[in-house]
Image 1 (cartoon, rainbow, N blue to C red):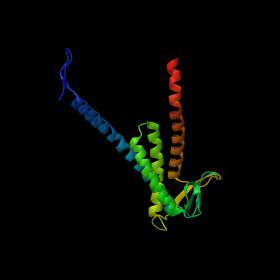
Image 2 (cartoon, rainbow, N blue to C red; image 1 turned 60 degrees about the vertical axis):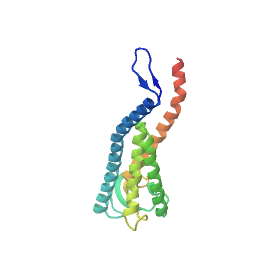
Image 3 (cartoon, rainbow, N blue to C red; image 1 turned 120 degrees about the vertical axis):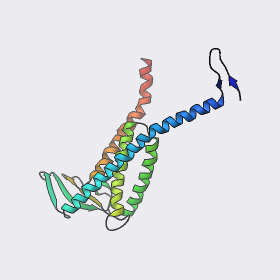
Image 4 (spheres, rainbow, N blue to C red; image 1 turned 135 degrees about the vertical axis):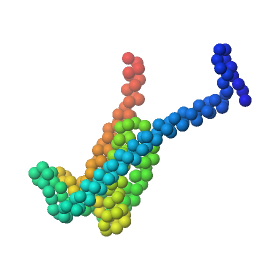
Length: 196
C-alpha cells in the first residue's frame, strides 16, 4: 500500500483513506435519512387514518342520498359511493383503478426515497396518502376486494363530490406541478445572477 507524507502533515494512506471517508459519509447520510423516512411514513399514516375516520363517520351517520348543509346549500355533506376515480370520473372501472392505484403508490414510494427537496416531499406525501386512502376503500369496502366503492361526501356547489383523500391528491399534484416548474427554471436563472 502506498503511503503519502507532505511536509508538516501527518501520514495518510491512499485509496483506503478515500474508501473509509466514503463509508463514513454514507453512514452519516443514512442516519440523517432515517428521521425523514419516519416522518414521511408518519404523515402518510395520518392522512390515511384521517381519511378513513371521516368516511366511517359519514357512513355511520348519513344514509345514501341524504345531506347536511354546512354553508347553506352551497357546501354540503352528502354520502355517495363512487366506483370510479377522483371526483366521480371513470365509473365502473374499479378493478383497473385499484391496480393503477397500487402501481402509483409503489412508484411514489420509490420517488420519495430519492427526493431531497422539502416541497416535493410534502407534495409526494399528500399524493401518496390520498392514493392509499382511496385504495383502502377499493380493497376493504363493498362489494369486494379491488372492487370496493370509494366513499365521497363533500359537495361544493355543482362540483363533483369528493373526500379528504381526493383533496390531498389534488393539492399534492398542484404542488408537484408548481415546484417542478420552479426547479426547471432555477438553473437558467443562476448564470444571470452569477454574471451580475
